[in-house]
Structure formats: structure tokens, C-alpha cells
Length: 192
Ligand SMILES: [Fe+2]
Ligand SMILES: [Fe+2]
Image 1 (cartoon, helix red, strand yellow):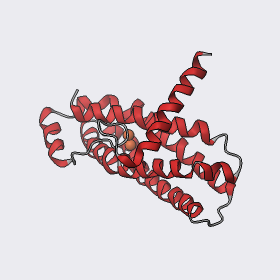
Image 2 (tube, helix red, strand yellow):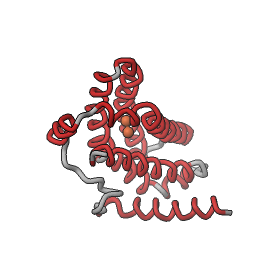
Image 3 (spheres, protein in one colour):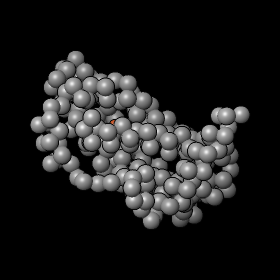
Image 4 (spheres, protein in one colour):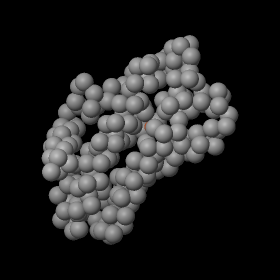
């Protein structure tokens, strides 16, 4: 498996892990105080989504999707929908970020709007990853030749995942600890 393909699979595992941790905790937030208490964490998570999945993962997938359509035109509709969803998900991240920034600036934000949009964001991100895993990732290695992968290497930025990669970026320390701790809690709960 080419290292870029390996990284994309690893990204899905990591991003899903982060989304599941957030989903588990956010379902318990009933009051404005609960949201405010976790504000720094949520803003870090949204920042990470913009800085890595939206900056590296989505553009690389978009390039790979073009190869899949070329090899298998019958997948054009599915690929087109997933490609369009990248833009939709990015719009949702921006919208959610604006709401949480407003809270950080002491503006009044309706709690039900915040809760609904956050749930929508997490669910859509997770469904998107599941669909890619099921429908298009299995086709990747069949559709790209060694020459295609080499060409792709030249086209994509050489960026490391700043949260789950070898070097944890300073500004994501809180988020990283949170994912590790929540993972332990989830494993404990699963073994009961
Ligand atoms: Fe995607
Ligand atoms: Fe993806």
C-alpha cells in the first residue's frame, strides 16, 4: 500500500476516534455552562479539522477520486457526491466555529441551535467517513498506478497530522489528552 493511501486510512481511524469522543460527551451537555466549560476543547477540535482534515485529507481524496472516476465511470455519481460533501462539511465547520467563537466573545447563542448544529456536524462527518471506507477506499489501489502515486506525491503538500502524527503540535495538547482519556473511559465502559 502506498504511504499516502496508508495515511488516508489512518486519518479516517483518527478522525473517527476524535468525533466519537466528542459525540459521546456532547450528548450530555444540557446547559450553557456545560458548553462554556468545554469551549476551549471544542475550538481546538474545530481548528484541527480546518488545519488538517480540510487542508490535507480532503484535497488528497479529491485528486484520488478523479482517478477512480476515470477507471470506473459507474462510480461517478457517488464520487461526485462525496466530493461535493467536502465543501458542505467545510461550510458546516465554519458555521459551527462562528457560533463557538460568539460564545467565547460572550454573545448570546441559542442553545438548541448550537446543540443541533454540533450533532449534525459530528454525524455528517462520521457518515462521510463510513461511506468513503465502504464505497471508494477499496477501489483506490486498483485505480492508481505507481506512476499516478508518484505524480500525486509531487502535487500534495508534505504535511504531518498535528494531533495524531509523530509530533504533537503545542496548541492541541488539551485535545490530545482529552482523546486519550476518553478512549480509556470508552474501553472501560465496553469491557463492563
Ligand atoms: Fe472525504
Ligand atoms: Fe476521508
